[in-house]
Amino acid sequence: MPKLKTHEVEILKSVEKNFFDVVPQKFETFCALNASIIAATLRHFNIVAKVQPCQLWCATPSNNFIVGFIHETPMEGKWDGHAVCAAKDWIIDAGLSHLRRDHGISVPPIAVIPRFMVRSQTIARADISATERIWWMRPPSDVNVEPPQEPEDVVSAYAQALINRIGVSYSITRPLMSSSLEMTGAVSS
Image (cartoon, rainbow, N blue to C red; front, side, top):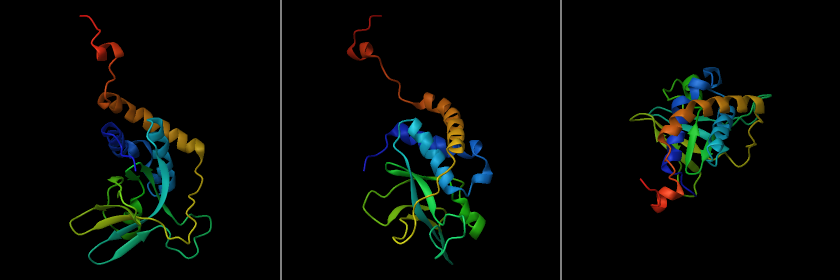
C-alpha cells in the first residue's frame, strides 16, 4: 500500500484541525457525509481518498461497544454502518461522536490515524486513554456495506469551504518547487 508523503500527512492534520470549524457540529454523527466531505477535500489536494465502510469498536475496562453494522434489521431509512475516509496508509474518522452520544465515552471529535499495513480484519487502532482503546474493523461479510449516496451539493459546498480554510495553511507548509533554472544552477546573480 502506498504511503502518504510528509506534506500530505500535514494536509490530513490540517483537515483534523479545521473540519468542525467549517462543518456544523449538527453533522458530527453523519459519518458517511463527513467521510465524503473529507475525501473530496483530499482529492482536491491530489491525495487518493475514498469512503471506507467499517465497524468502530471501543474497549473499556468494564465493557465493549460497537458502532456500525450491529442490527439484524437496520432501522427504516437509516444506514446501519460506520464510515471513515481512507487515504493511502491513513484513515480519518469524523464520526467518533457516536461513542460519546450513545455510550458516554470521551472521544475527540475527529481522529487521524495510521492504518495497519498488513492484511487483517483490523483497519487501525488508537488509545483514547490509559485504559480505553478504539479499533476500526472491516464490516461483517453478510451486511450491506454500501454507504448512502450523500447530496453532492452539500458535499461540494463543505469540501470547498474546507479547501479554502486549509489552503492558506497548506501553502505555507507545502514544499516550494524550484524552477528548472535554479535546479541546474543556471541562474545568474
